[in-house]
Amino acid sequence: MKGRRKREQILLQDDVESLKIKEDEVVIYWFQNVWNAFQRHEFLKQIVKSLNAPLIYDLAGLLSVRLHRDFIAELPQTLALKILTYLDARELFIASMVSIKWQMLAENDQLWKLKCKESKIVDIPVQTTLTHSASAQALWKRIFQTNLTLRKNWERGRCRVLEVAGHSNRVLCVRFNGRRMASGSLDRTVRIWNSSTGTLLQILNGHTRGIWAVRFYGRNQLVSSSYDGTIKIWNIKSSMCLKTLYSHNGPVWAIERKGDLLLSGSQDRTAKLWDIRRYRLLLTLSGHTAAIFAVDIDDSISVALTGSADRSIRLWNIINGDCHKIIWAGHASSVMAVNINMGFIASSSDSVITLWNAKTGEKCNEYFGHSRRIECLQLRITDPDNAIGYIVSAGRDGFVKYWDIKEGTCIQTLRGHMDVVNSIHFDELRIASASYDHEIKIWDFNVESDSVNVLSKR
Image 1 (cartoon, rainbow, N blue to C red):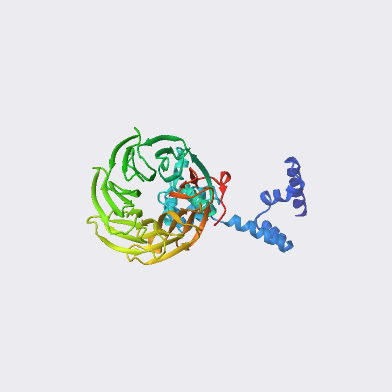
Image 2 (image 1 turned 90 degrees about the vertical axis):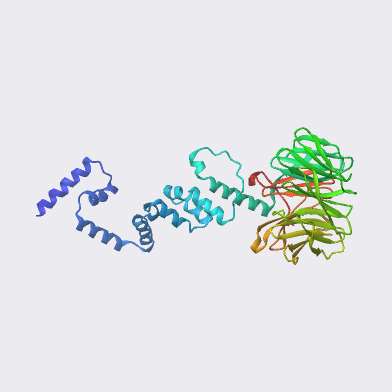
């Protein structure tokens, strides 16, 4: 028996030498190729008994990885995606780093479309030309990421500022529509610009006094109102005035358009409703006892809104012209701006912004922060059930501010104009502001963080 064991050891030694196995690999070779199951078991038992606590901890970690089964990868894709729907966006980002299989599942386009819906992201544009199939599959993830970047930029005041100059006098109004932007000035011209580059595209001449309001109408038309008491409708391509509307007996301070319906407000204390497709006056809204500085139309095109120097806001029935509600602003100053959106009204009087419930006329909140009279504002409600949304405002202090209406706080103050800011317009990506300093500024928040201006807060 001893002779047999000795011969095995000699043969084993010959195998090791013939295979040129290193000394530290001999035990592994024997374990894998020579020992039976009982011998392996006994060897491991002795090894484990000899380990200290740290080494046992390391061994336990290695064993847990070896015994792990990727249940997500083994499930049918439909069921795996169903499980991943219970993760939030941050957890999905983490899950995508687990493995190639998890990354493929976590970037599923329909999964990210659901996350966008849960976050109420439905229409944020993505500036991309994705054509590769893998990139196209991640479209909704890109939309989510773009929206997340936008939200952070708005919160932190990260933006690129484009300065647009060309008017020779105070800029009184501004409005953009896609890549085109229109402005009106005390220099009696309306100018059309490329809103991305600030390049001047057209100059519209015809008004004899300053232009106080502009609105785009369709693809190639523009409506403007002036201190000269007229409203003009222009063909932008040809720079020709198609029609001049006469009826007001004083400066036309404000206009608003929804569809073919135009609402105008004047120094003559009246507001007028027009069918601008047929160039017809439909109704004259009388009741204010002082000049009307602000007008708006609700999204259902059933209610007209006017704000006046008599310190009241009036709501009118668009069909018959009846005034069915009067809201007294309660401040000792004119109502300079009004905007209605999804059942709420924002108005400004002196340096105070007030939010109202349009149905009841009750005051919801007030916002303090401007040091001088507010000249313009715009309201955007994102969740009417919980009164969540934003207001952008500007005025005689030269600042543009935007507010969280639920919290009642100013999110950021944009500083840059050297004089009164008389008009603003904003969407999800940018704010345009027009000032007495002869300039328009476009505050573009759709930028990467490595190429931005960081604005001072509040």
